[in-house]
Length: 132
Length: 186
Image 1 (cartoon, rainbow over the protein chains, first blue to last red):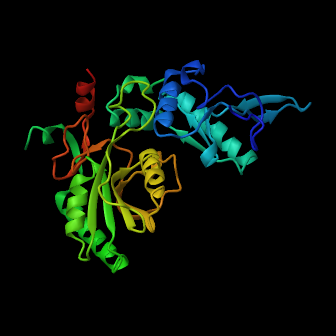
Image 2 (cartoon, each protein chain N blue to C red; image 1 turned 180 degrees about the horizontal axis):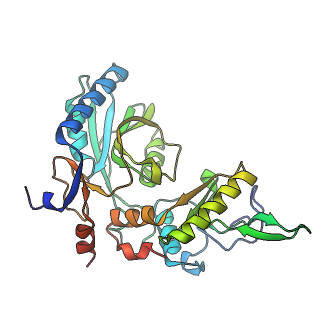
Image 3 (tube, rainbow over the protein chains, first blue to last red; image 1 turned 45 degrees about the vertical axis):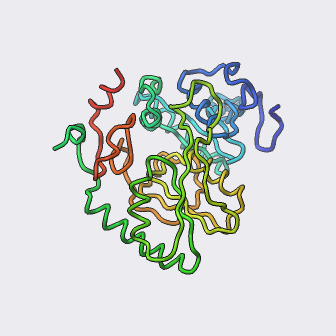
């Protein structure tokens, strides 16, 4: 089972490769597909294992946070899948920039909708599964 | 123009550009692997054209071998993991191995192959890829010693690269028209 107290992780773990993928409640179909690809290539993953506070009010209460979609423990890497919708991409880009400013030791990559669509096309899968 | 070539939006790399670069890579490998009798491995089928052209451009003694693995899309749904369809014929222990790839983008396939090959104790293991698309890289720490071309984020086919088993035989590398992708999706 996943060790939620593993170094660098905090907060509740919602899913991992060691869980049955079907039992993880993904927010979107593209995330489930991505988890399937990671499983296929033997890459350990955890789904939204950590929330990074990005903004606080004057009382110190967190008013904005960011939960990257995946964490790959073997590579110490967070991955955020993005939509094909430009307004949401812009918002996520801003969050990732802020996360990098506040947590410079955290490795995170954005996997854009277009990249994911092409990845699925490479595998001969329908492009529609890549959109959200 | 062949029927397959009609589906190409634009040529990204001409036959001549590929040949020139492959010859350069062959010279580099000949120099750097001199007296090491390298074993050049590729995975069927995408890297076959590159592999055969590259090995003929190398002027030192070498060995070649091939392997085949299932790809994500070809495997039955939820089958779990990569399956080795054809294993290598040559023993890797103590050999200087070059993994020949057609393209590296996310690095997931290459990462899997490196784990598989490293477990067989080669003396060294490096990658030679014809195309590198770093924009989509997920796994960064790959020992890419030789790269032919860095390419932009376009869907490319030809010179071994396919879309649903089509276009591999094109002698150049081109960007596939969206209409060809959409057609195949129907």
